[in-house]
Image 1 (cartoon, rainbow, N blue to C red):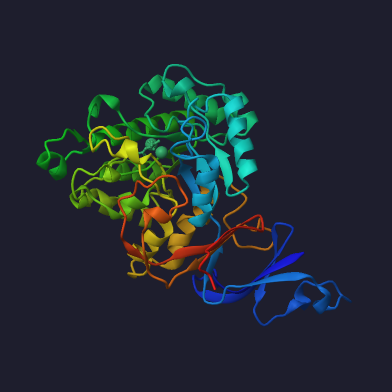
Image 2 (cartoon, rainbow, N blue to C red; image 1 turned 30 degrees about the horizontal axis):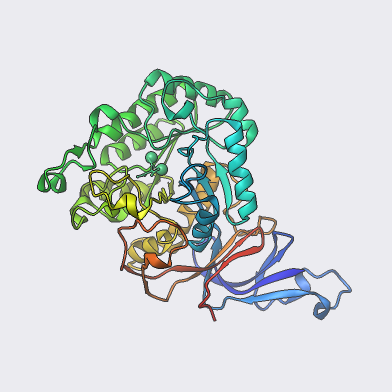
Length: 440
Ligand SMILES: NC(=O)N[C@@H](CC(=O)O)C(=O)O
Ligand SMILES: [Zn+2]
Ligand SMILES: [Zn+2]
């Protein structure tokens, strides 16, 4: 049985929209052709086109892009199923247009042994929604004391090593990890944070912290690790990837490192491209995440870094927490906000609809670029590629309503924001895993 996504608006190499029909067969893109080209392009000679069993899905007027890729997410399973499960996280991902997601190991138990990697993969297979790529921890229990068994973790299916949630405090530990990862051709992904500079702080240093008498997280707490790790990456030759860049100083260090050929890549989250600490309305923990919202100047530096290629990709850092946990207030609530279901509409509305970015720039940062950085066989709308495809309505404006989220998390600062660019249909390996119920 074939499927045809009909009248798709797809971006061509020049970044212009063209109308195409996309034929899917056995989970792969069989052909992408002009809407007027007919079936003869792919039907075997002698076959009557009307005999071909084909399901037609008309997406006239909708944008069709490669399935979005999110290389930094928290699915919370095992251990924190009250916040999210691989199933609920998967539903949220595909509703947000994501077909591949890479999940962080700060679960309970920590994903620091092959069994837990396997468990994550099994649960993902059962859920059968987005493709789930597990990261494994750098250190046992993410405690920073002892390296995990990299070989066994890689063999079990881990795609990289990270202690996300905390920074690796010891430079020697990080160097050992990088040496080992480099020898195995695996990336090290770093949450950059020097604990000695942040103890007890919950928001960024600056006007908001002062106004509310809160201890502030300084920019150097992130950038010190970025600088240290760049030097260690230079020494070891590892592919070093910086998590959720949020400061002007980090952007500067990464830019310089790239210039001299050090193998560093970086990611940024939508909230760090859109919100500054001055936007935080009050002591509401839905605005609390790590790294914190920084100054407007940092936001501008992150945007510039993304625009000039210093920052390679956009990730959500989807970090669901329960309402009870978030109700504890700014100082006591856990760090993190959900991200899957608002990421594309936020970025489309704020940067593309305003004319600051081209549509293809945004799409590349969420598809081809993550595929390039992490060497994935997806993120492209091409004949022969996996049929991971996202259909997006660029016109309908709708307010963010957390009660409608598929994620268990309601922790977002974007409630009520009027946005355009909502994903309406998502395919993973040719299987329709999400369809907007209001779609006509
Ligand atoms: N980003 C966050 O604020 N929180 C993440 C941890 C992390 O990404 O460092 C979490 O696991 O909740
Ligand atoms: Zn982190
Ligand atoms: Zn994270």
